[in-house]
Length: 86
Image 1 (cartoon, helix red, strand yellow):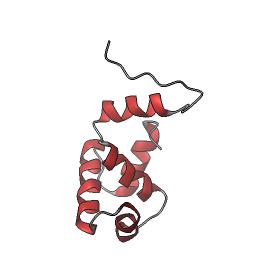
Image 2 (cartoon, one colour):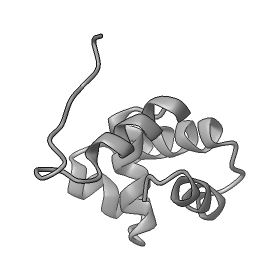
Image 3 (cartoon, helix red, strand yellow):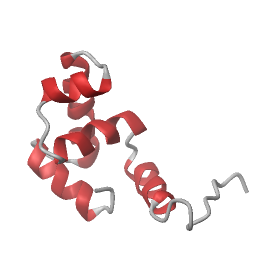
Image 4 (cartoon, one colour):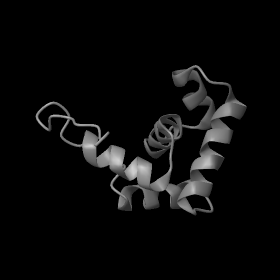
């Protein structure tokens, strides 16, 4: 059926997370940047750890906020947690 199958013994949350990402429409990079923001990293810190430019990090965060229907990063982190992403 074209679905991704992951053995839950290998990555127990991978299937649920992939489903939630697809449902919300977040890309893997948007998710990665949001996850790092949820860990308390600033945009410059995220840029350094991912090898992205600061403006690119800001763009990914803005896109994630829009897709989650959030006004700021705190609200986005809360909504991502509710959706089972974090």
